[in-house]
Amino acid sequence: MNARAIAAEVTDPEMPMLTLEDLGVLRDVREDGREVVVTITPTYSGCPAMATMRDDLVHRLTDAGYAARVEVALSPAWSSDWITERGRRALRDHGLSAPGPAPSRGGPIPLTLLPTARAVTCPQCGSARTQLTSEYGATACKALYRCEDCLEPFEHVKEI
Amino acid sequence: MSTESAAGTPDPNDEHGSVYDGLLAHSDLPGDASQWAFGTDFEDPLAGVDTTVPAELDAAELAAYCLALGDDALVMSHRLAEWCSNAPDLEDDIAVANIALDLLGQARLLLARAAAADPSLVPTLPEGSPVPAEDALAFFREAVDFRNVRLVEVANGDFAQTIARLLLFATVRLGAFERLSSTDHAFGADPVLAAIAAKGVKELTYHRDYAGRWFLTLAQGTDESRRRLLDGLAAVWPLHAELCAAYDAGPDVDAVLDQVLAVSGVERPDVAPMSGAGHTEALSRMLAEMQVVARAHPRGLW
Image (cartoon, rainbow over all chains, first blue to last red; front, top):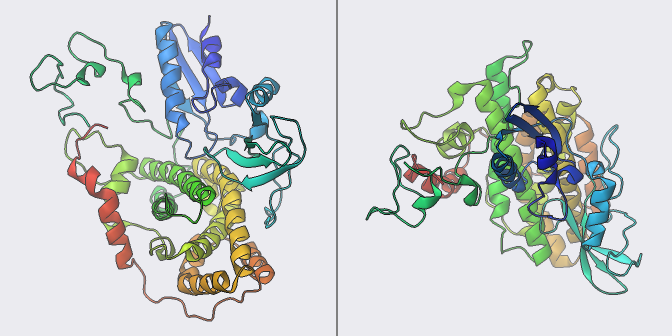
């Protein structure tokens, strides 16, 4: 397996159903002989999973005989639009709601004083009758929802 | 924490050794840093990022500006984190902690950017200290050297006052970050700061909406929630002018704030700006608690 394939298999420590590639944080893998430089981008500025991602990448590549280094790319900023179709399926298969399209940027950012309008369906029962509980969940990237039919709570990966 | 001697060779068979020594590299074992929760070495938030200051910018001025933005985020983050386990309900406990985490991430990036642009800002630590520049700035400066605005350092007050402060802060910071990320601001010419700002815009949009919704809810809730909100807003309002002056956020910011106030049926408080400059006593007290462990172990490995 080449370095790119190894790096692409490393998973997110908090959403392990997603590979770093499916999450869209794996930006580049440069291979020069046995030396590898992997570039990743943070999802949120304070995401504590970044350190674990870096360690996991170095660990896996070192095990495969590479001398690996991880670098950061800040621009362009990560968008939830970069989660692949396969990643979205994996989220739904594990009971998480996948993000809709990220808001497009242009002109001043509108203030939203009503709960964010999203067409979110319950990943447990498929009902469209869902209610936002909180815009913030167990990790920075997720909002909390509740299904009004099956009454199960679930998490929705936020659009950014 | 391990022993302070980074150069020494830990040995699990030594009578002074510990069961954790096997995780560190020593004479005949490579060690396995990945077994530590977050590794044994420091994760540079700007690893691999080109931090060369563009020729048209003055490096010291850029660094001072990044330091001010970073200090605001660090101090505000610390204040918000004080709500952990104390917020009115679990969802808001989590929400406020998440906002604090976003701001801590912004602080790390901005302090690292400031240190890279002007290394003379970074306090000197004892030889052999593994403390990276961003931590040296956060934990080894005195209150007088912090560049944050006073709005972020004063005590939280109740939840309504915290919401009023967060609304003022997120509104102005979002406005300034929008300008920085669109090069509508002199320091936006620095691609590193512009990238940090562009990322921060996405986060601050959620912070501002969160604060705005709670502001409206409290203002239009019960007599008691409205009373507390008005008191909280009046308490932080004297520090609003300094915030606006520090951020140079543009005219849209006032319109956004007025929109929240109008929907909430709240007038701008009729209280004068707090005089003076520098810091209140609250910052020294906060830093004493925040910095004490790092200062006690300047050569510590974590």
